[in-house]
Image 1: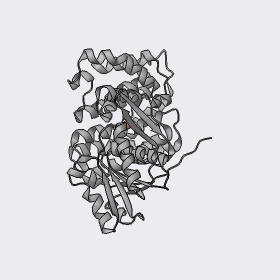
Image 2: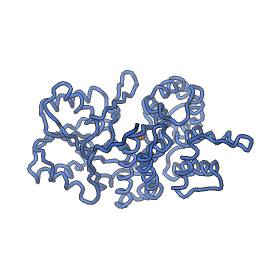
Image 3: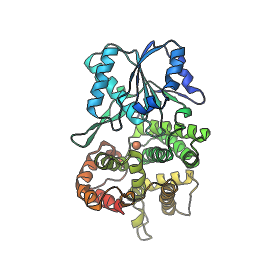
Image 4: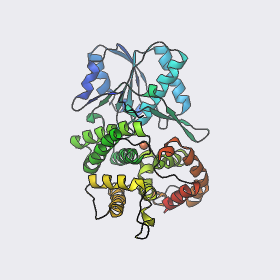
Length: 382
Ligand SMILES: [Fe+2]
């Protein structure tokens, strides 16, 4: 038996932030990062709350790849302030930090239900609707995934005004993260009709609006569409989990600090090729792997259909490479110019082992061996 659940109530579209005037909580802890405060963006959150007479306190210590020591600072803040609700404002790090802070604080002292309202300021992680959070154990160079239904936010507000100032490079990285979430949800071993419906819509939106949002950050329509696509893809992979692409990208993030979406984007052509095994497909070996059909459907959604399924999957690989080039995302680690070949090659063995143990890898449509993963990491060099 399978089940599909959407726990989070979603407020979206123009003036979605006005919802903050209607929340029934009088004492709120806002969890965010220093940039949101310094840039003045925070006022878009605090102004409607002040209008509604809501008192609040700020925890603005969130940093990228939230380390455990910052989470424990947030736990202390929450248990001292005892808010009726938490409002998380920021990218994946702020929302993941808020999930972890609430979870750990209420395990220490369960003083009542404390709803979490997630307000994303990037269009990428989908964290606003998922039951996952990732925190970092910096000493061990390890990312620790937390998975629990209780982590899922109760509400999210998707307002494109908050993403207008996201620079092009981050729009590109986070947008490709959205695409990777949707694609991995479509081919996951846990795929199902409900998740596929959401993921395919996210893919269609990425195909039309990601480049537009990258080329013109003030294109509010494209921004709002990508904000919705991010959430749709989040709902999809919350049900199906992800795959080898994320399993391998997490290691590139943990060891070489390559931004998450960028690592996913660079790996994507290699993973599509591996999962579909298109390079070994021939007339004498006409059968194809299960992921081929799913990738071909995705290619058709993007308007890329060709005369057979294998050629259609090839066109999907080409489309991803085209997107990377158009958005100035390097196609290989060597192209990045920040990591030497020696330091990269030295870490491949460890990364391959960790990628196979990563919880995302378990739902990949094609089982990978350590040799397979090493081969993909090596191909990614150049
Ligand atoms: Fe991701």
